[in-house]
Length: 250
Image 1 (cartoon, rainbow, N blue to C red):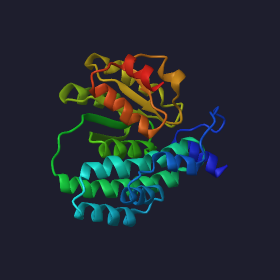
Image 2: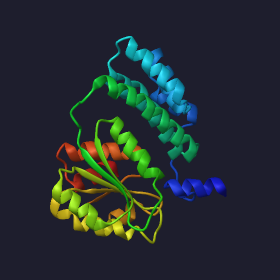
Image 3: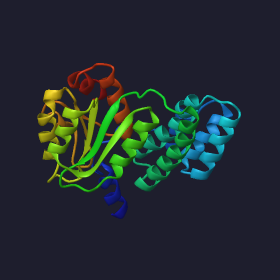
Image 4: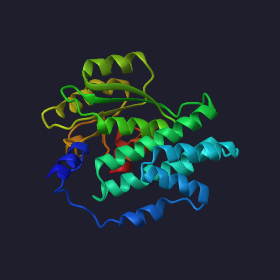
């Protein structure tokens, strides 16, 4: 029951209907780069080996490897693997957190080498008012940053009015909001309504949220996996509205 509780806390219901899923090793093979050096780094992320990820990233950089290529073709496949294995029910939150730590460590070294690069877009990330569970939010923020997005982390237990003020005063492309508890998820509905004037959509996730909930109101998009946040952000920045993006990620 402890493991079930952890999984619910990260945003998955144990009784949810599951499609036929690949086995963990099949998922690994699906994402594993053909380049041996990249594959070793991907495996370090999968295993959550922070020091190994740092060592392998540093070695690639010393060889003159393009930092962007390291992030896109070696580090990201690792977190993609772990997230898919998690979604399939074959991994748990601690494994995702360790993989995320390894990802962040590698990305930090690459960013140091790149210096200032153009942002892919600006995303505000938060846990809605009344909720203090921020594991999912933190992973989403890290993955968005790894994909070039500037993330404004508003924290947890965030008031709707604070988000409204943010989108009024700053250039924001997307808001990601999470809710673990059914008693707080209605705050996401209010948030989506209150910032609709700005054209900024709300990507919603968390254990209390599902497609049926997000489709009951406008200006919202459901994201089941942390990786969905990247797809949603990229689509929004490309100029698509919330209705178009909702259909794409459904």
